[in-house]
Image 1 (cartoon, rainbow, N blue to C red):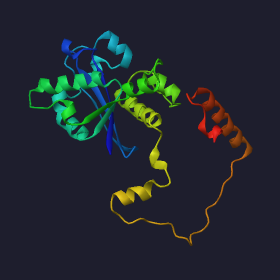
Image 2 (tube, one colour; image 1 turned 45 degrees about the horizontal axis):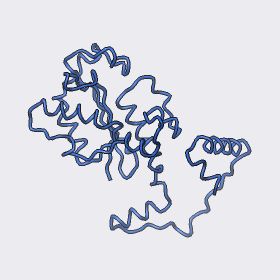
Image 3 (cartoon, rainbow, N blue to C red; image 1 turned 90 degrees about the vertical axis):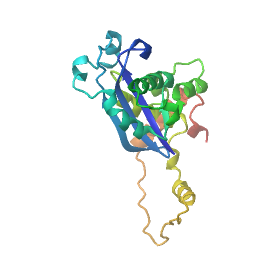
Length: 235
């Protein structure tokens, strides 16, 4: 399963008023694992960035002056996201801008939903946490995802953070399950590889008192902040 976590930055709030995309950030996940493959590009909008937008992302007109136009990156962008599931926080905003940009080129590009499916992580978060703040910063705090580098919005950084939030919000990285590789091998029709029974015994490194104390403190913190408490303490 190929998923692309996507975010954009723009010159303003409404493409119908002539506002444009100035940054696209995408990170790839396959079977819920980050692959390290990503797409990141700044785009010259050929118009001024609004002051209110500049306060959010800090991307100046001077910085964008020598960047490619959207028409220069459209093919590579569509090819990167094609046939994937897009994960976007407040998807109508980003998809609306991208659809507008593609249509404006008049090259026969289709709407984004014809290239890929879209999952709105904001809608998902509102269902899981009704009546609470569900912006990206609030979700980072709720799921203990480090966003200390996020002084300003940036498409690639926000996509990376959202990927971590999404994995936590949907149950963590399930691929860490001990049965994962065996199940994946069965699905692919491959031969199951088994451990050598004559292998050397693994070295066991036990936690010291300081590490145990830090672990217990972390569990207590989770128990206070998590909606259903800390399951490990209830086990």
